[in-house]
Length: 139
Image (cartoon, rainbow, N blue to C red):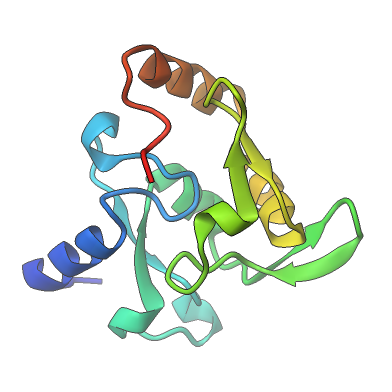
């Protein structure tokens, strides 16, 4: 999908230049964030700005066409976190060392697991960013 530079810029400003799920800053990743359909087109989602956000490639690929996931603590299906409509800090928190994402709610726990937000690669990368003072993002 092609979007105008002005729409991409508006989305980036709204997203504070970070992935809507793992909060990775575009400026420290070295890879541009990808355009994310909150409701995937395969599930009827539109290309309207209200259905678009930015995410890193890892989160976007892991999310795929998911719209619901299972919370392993409650065995209940929950609707995916919507970075456009929900506040990240209400559903997630950072570990004391700033590398591990903790799900605070059923939605948060389910996203952490479904998108594999704490895999070894991400943890090692975040540890480097923490060491140089670039992570976690300031809110």
